[in-house]
Image 1 (spheres, rainbow, N blue to C red):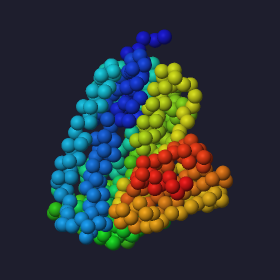
Image 2 (image 1 turned 135 degrees about the vertical axis):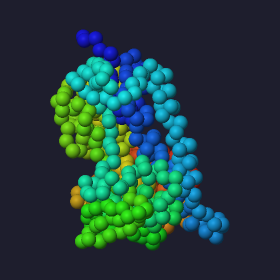
Image 3 (image 1 turned 90 degrees about the horizontal axis):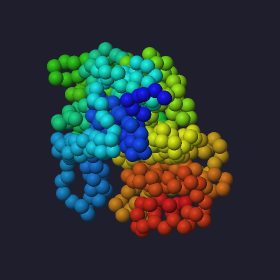
Image 4 (image 1 turned 90 degrees about the vertical axis):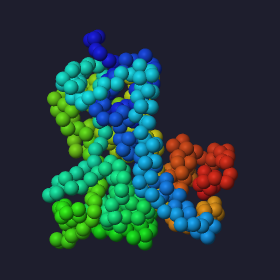
Length: 442
């Protein structure tokens, strides 16, 4: 066997790497990770953790709003303090993750890596070799290819704003757009969402999406369907968005939220023959690329599963098991839920309502306003839809509510393990809780 510097060398150090690299090193493998930015990647530093910290005050004000007359007083959001709290939460994370890695012997290599052959990644001119390589370079924000694109900002810029602009244009209508529109509107900004087509959040049940859009519209957010944004321009301290048939919108800040694209360029994939496309790196059912000893993990993979943190964690742990000899089986993805942190939230897992209706599976609708537990804090907006197969096993669920993420989360075991009525009957939840409320519908 060739003498390599490492048994396994990872390019990128987000969840697609460190969740598996730590136990892999504990199994006795020599492991190295290469990272040019903050250890932890997108999620801890400029994604999930930051976003949910900014969302928490918004959720709190929504609850106070519903309980008006019981909880009184003039509540308002201080954007500057929200961002300061966000930084207090996320600033320690890179050092914490670094400590977990180095504490088990993983070597962290700081710099930009590029593959030069099937076993070598060059970092700042220095070749580093390994028996197996893992590409875990993730995604980055897309930038519109239009005149003035340099005038727009991305999601990381938005979450680092110490002063919230008075007038904000958000281009796009996916996760980032809808979540940040919710936050900015709640904090007092005049928000306009410029949609590429006529539907937002295409991955989610559209009647639920319309519930969220209707609520945001009532709160003052403007939605422009089929906007066809063509140019950004600057005039003094203001910015102009040109869209449609020569229409214009003047704002103080522009957020380009038109999606995220895989980091596959300029890392040597072509040099070593790793096949990729516009959606990411192509892998087989062992997460193996077209080069036998090179694998991929996390959001950089071209896959059907949601490109979310839990997916990346599952893939990273799977590769650990594969490399340490704990398994030689193909990856077997579980039911992976997804949610959008608007207010109300939308969450889903398993078979969709649309698929169920085509197949003839049973769909049961439960209105939030009819659930006694939701009336504790006066929730009235939204509904849940449960999908059952012919044996009345739960195979899918989606919900729009203030607690949609928690409700769907608690239903996961029923879907993943195919629990039948007798098994469900043996699960006793704390009461009263959202879990008890969700399971009693089964």
